[in-house]
Image (tube, rainbow, N blue to C red; front, top):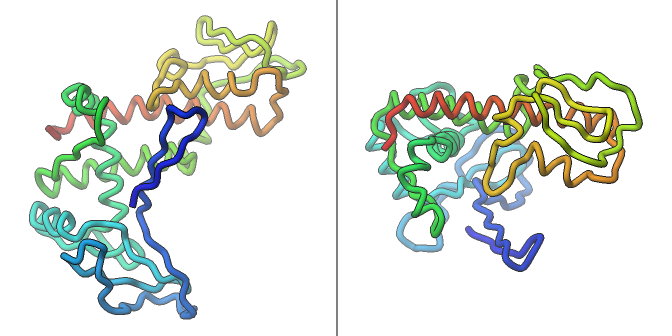
Length: 246
């Protein structure tokens, strides 16, 4: 499913590709249960739906693609909440594999012209070992970007000077990100300050969006998490680039 809407300006279009399709059910059992066959919109394949904690859902995946991945890997697909080990792969594993591929510098460079004009084309996994390597790294980046990884709590920066915490004039100099004339975040890696995600530089945009505002305690911690996340993203992308994808 794709939904498009304008955001920020009439030139920006947002697309949503939900991993799950949900439908409420009266069943309140927390145990997984096969409900039967539910034809997809193409009428070509049928998809099982499941109940988990009272919610009727199914992964929003094309079963023809899942079947091809099964053939590539030699292992079967199973939904995440009943997966026990790596003898099977789940929808989350597919998501993390894709996330890793899209963060491969080699992939981005090779297909940069195509990525400017169309949705990315993700190659099928070469083999099961490569798949699990990319799943692991993609999962790390995903959790870091969601700020759910414990890693983002391991701050690499400081905010050493007391003051009014007002964001007035931004300046990056010698590892210091000044938010006004006297206060700054220290030990900010240049790679994090200049790092792009999509068309934005998060370390800069986050502060620019708060110009004229006072940062509270949670804001100061949150910004330091962002710096960790960007630094770790760069590190993991280098690890991904050691794996042959394309």
